[in-house]
Image (cartoon, rainbow, N blue to C red; front, side):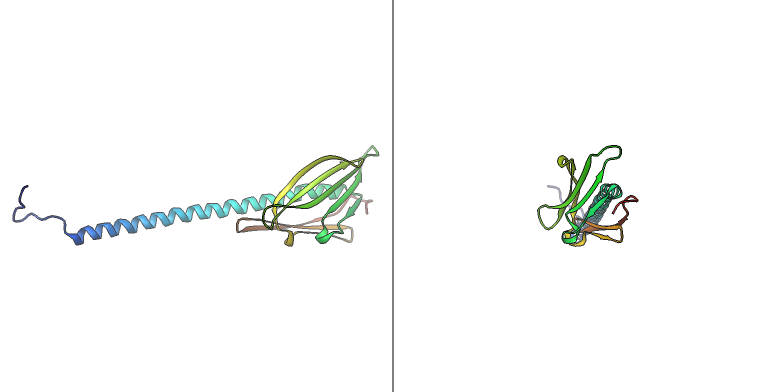
Amino acid sequence: MEKLKKDQRGVTMIELMMVIAATALIAGGLTMTIMNMFNTNLRASNHMAAVSQVEHAGFWVSPDVQMALSVNASGGLGFPLTLTWVEGGTTNVHEVIYTLEDMPGELKRLQREHYIESELDSTIVVAEYIDPFQTSCVWDSGQLTFTVTATVGAQSETREYEIKPRPGSY
């Protein structure tokens, strides 16, 4: 081993500890920034999913109510919502029933069943993550007020649709 010359020195323990501390601070700051970006992205993604669900619910319910000759929203919070009409140019009776179906946890799915002449034509899930305590259908003065709230993660979105059936109905 070589001996150190008189003017030559190594790294002291204090200098080494300061470099380690500075590196730890920089790494901690970068980690916090990256985690913040992920959390912000997750919140934005959850909010967009909630917006998509309430818009999808309105997209399906609105035209069905506009077609309806008969509206029955008498269940708890207006569900099941039953809409009936006769197809133009025929005598085919259409009936659409919207129900809130269970999902894991407290949230529900908005399901649509379409019947033609009392035979099931189709069943689809219109929207998911629906908060049943903040979702309702109220039939009043010839207008349906459909309020729907979707909650995805910690993000919620609520929309209220005021829909009138076609003239000559109800």
